[in-house]
Image 1 (cartoon, rainbow, N blue to C red):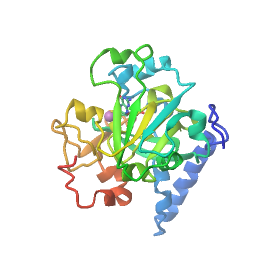
Image 2 (image 1 turned 135 degrees about the horizontal axis):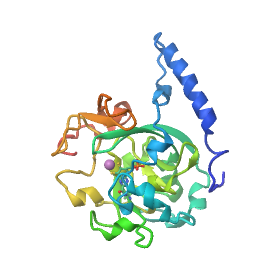
Image 3 (image 1 turned 45 degrees about the vertical axis):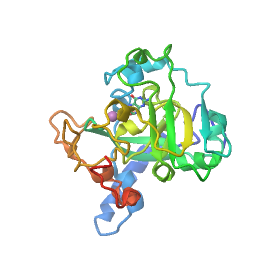
Length: 298
Ligand SMILES: Nc1nc2c(c(=O)[nH]1)N[C@H]1C(S)=C(S)[C@@H](COP(=O)(O)O)O[C@H]1N2
Ligand SMILES: [Mo]
């Protein structure tokens, strides 16, 4: 399947069908109360935020530090053409166009909880493919232990990079087993529409069991490396932001509690939601951290 820039109709669930399926899931959930377990359906029981909410409350500091700045400014970003430079310990390094990247990829809808380290959350219906598919395409060599990612740095298109709020370009990283995990996706759309620019067009990482800042936007470089790569928020403040940054209600941020979260769109009088271990993905990811002290490796 070739990449279509207007990735809307054929490759992903149309919105009407999606909404219809949500109703089906709601009735399936009713049946499940009778004792039938259906863990495969669990993610579909989540009630996604509206596209309006998802695209108007953002963190994308290259376009300003206010939550509404990305929606105002990200239109300046040129996303077509786009390519990713893949290098380091790979068999097939090089410049991959979006068409090269999308060639052969299985694009799916993934409805994930999304938890920012600032203690707010949403539920987002992403469209994307598992990062392990891309890693397989480029051929990971045996010495590789981590994956490093880099966001575009375009002073002409990104008004926020004039300010040294963090070091530019924005960089992130994952351990190789985290990157290979089937929950880790490269997202190219939301609600069946191409990725909105404020959400990291045309392609961004989504790691649903980690704090939102690990999910780096508008990626232009991916490198397979031997050593733990530097990451933007860890460089800015290592005491407050670790490399792992797994969602953990039991390990507070030095300046606030991580036990609960404010649900975006729930209204100002709504109760805060209890934050779940690994953001609700504990069954699927806890084994990655077996034997590790999670308060030390925060
Ligand atoms: N390049 C880049 N990626 C980024 C950020 C950023 O400022 N720049 N912010 C991060 C943070 S803190 C969060 S919470 C999420 C927000 O993603 P969203 O706006 O799509 O909800 O993007 C992450 N990825
Ligand atoms: Mo965040």
